Structure formats: C-alpha cells, structure tokens
Image 1: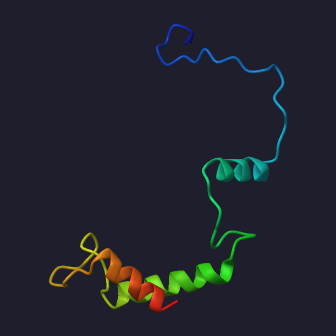
Image 2 (image 1 turned 90 degrees about the vertical axis):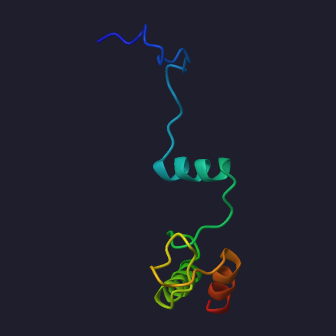
Length: 91
C-alpha cells in the first residue's frame, strides 16, 4: 500500500543512520524534554517517598477525604486543598 499521497504522510527526512541510544537514555531524554525533575517509585527514583505518598493517598480514600469526582454518594466531598492538606499531614 502506498501512503505517499496520504494527507498524514510525513515529509520529514531523517538521516540514513540515526545515532543508536538505549531505551533508558530515550526515557531520560524524554523526561528532561518534558521538564520532569522528580520521580517517585521508579528504579533510581525516591522509592520511600513514593511509598509514603501512596500510603497517605490510600488513607485519604479510605477515610473518604476525597474530591467531588470520586466521592461516594452521600459523602460530602472535600476541596482539592483539603485533600492535599490531609495527604501532606499523613506523609
């Protein structure tokens, strides 16, 4: 099938041989390009901090300190600030 006439066909030309990089380097380059400066729960990231955050978030959900989008019926939703404050206090 010839896609050369397709409106989505890219006319970008690439060098015949692209430099070879590892998958890890591709991930790091992408993260840097997106401005990511902290990672939790990723090998090489801050695993303990990520676990503490997950534990506090789970506690928030268990105690129904949640925002309107996930509040069970009959439960008064909390504001984003209230949820954030609860999580921060429980980390």
